[in-house]
Amino acid sequence: MITSQTSSPTPPKYLQEDGVSEDCKKLLSTLPKEKGWIGSYIYNYQGFWTSPRLIQGVIACQQQFQAQNSDIILVTTPKSGTTWLKALLFSLVNRKKYPIFEQNHPLLVKNPHDLVPFLELKLYVDGQVPDFSSFTPPRIMSTHLPYDSLPKSVQDSRTKLVYLCRNPRDTFISMWHFTNNLRLDYIDTNSIEEMFDHFCKGVSLYGPFWNHVLDYWGKRIEKPKKVIFLMYEEIKEKPTIQLKRLAEFLEFPFSIEEENCGVIDEILRMCSFDNLSNLDVNINGKLSTGEETKMFFRRGEVGDWKHYFTLEMSEKLNHIIKQKFHGSGLNFLYI
Ligand code: A3P
Image (cartoon, rainbow, N blue to C red; front, side, top):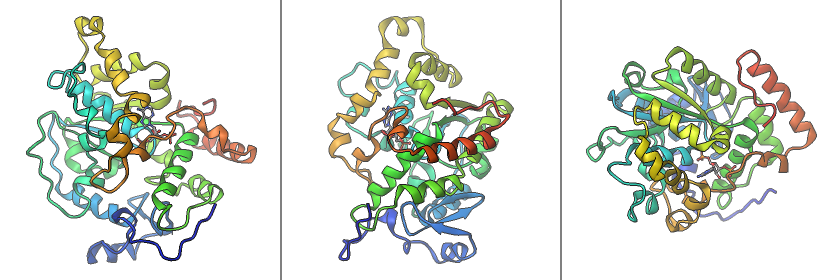
C-alpha cells in the first residue's frame, strides 16, 4: 500500500505547501492541523478542514467575489458527483445557446470543471483577479464552502444554490482513491484505515462531512427559493424527475415540446458517466489546475463502498451516521 519514493519529481501546485503568502503562513500557524489527504497537512479554518493553498483562495473569494442575482452556484462536498452535476447544470441552463443535439456541444471538447469553474479552488486560488468578462448571465460557478463561509454577497443576493450530497460511504471511498491518485507519484499514499479514522473524526476535505450536509439540509427549508438539495443516489435512480425538479427550481423548466423531442433524455445521455468518461478530453486531458481529467471518472456507482468496507468499518460509520443525522430526516443507512 505504501509506496515511498526517494527521488520524486517536483509535486504539482495542489500538493505544495510553500506557495502561500506570508499572511497566510501566519494564519496557518494559529490553526488546528492534522495529517493531510493531499498535501502534508490539512487545517481547520472557520470550522471546516482544507489545505493551505485553498485557505488563501477562500479568503480572497470571501473578500472579493460579487455575486449577481442571476448567478447559479453548485455546492458540494468533494467527491459527491460535482463533475456530473456541473455537466448537467451547464447543459440544462445553456440549452438555448448550445442545443444539446448539436455536434459541437462544449461538453464534447471541454471537461465540466473547465465549463463551471470553482470559486476558491480555481478563480481565486492564487491571488489572481478573475476575469468574468467571458461569463454571460446566468453565470454558473461552484464551491465546496459551508453556507456560513460563502462570500457575503452570495448569501445576501438572490443567487441560487444547488447543493449535491452523496452517501458518506461512497464519498469516503471516492475521496480516498482520488487523493491517493494525486499523491501517488510524489509522496506516499494514505492507508484506507488511517483515512477512515480521519473521516469518522470529521477530518475530511471540507468536513466534517455531516456538518456540511446538515448545514445545507437545513437551509433548503429556511430558504426554499435559494437552496435546492439534491442527492447523487436519487439522480441515479430517477434522473428525469430530478432533472425536471432542478430545471424548475432554476426557473428554466422544460417545455412540453422539449420533453416530446427528447431533450431531457439527451441531456442525461450526454452527461452520463459512460458518455463523458469515454470522451478524449476526459481520457487524455488536463485541467488548468493540474489534475488529469480522467481522475474525475472512476466508477460512478452507488454502493462501491461494499468492496472496501470491513464489517467493523460499516458498524462504526453506521453508528456515527445514526448519531449525527438523528432527527434530521436524512437517512443514509440503507444505501
Ligand atoms: P467514484 O470515485 O465513486 O467513481 P466529484 O465530481 O465530486 O469529484 O466526484 C467524483 C465521483 O463522481 C467519482 O465517483 C466519479 O466516478 C463520479 N462521477 C463522475 N462523473 C459522473 C457521472 N457522469 N455520473 C455519475 N457519476 C460520476
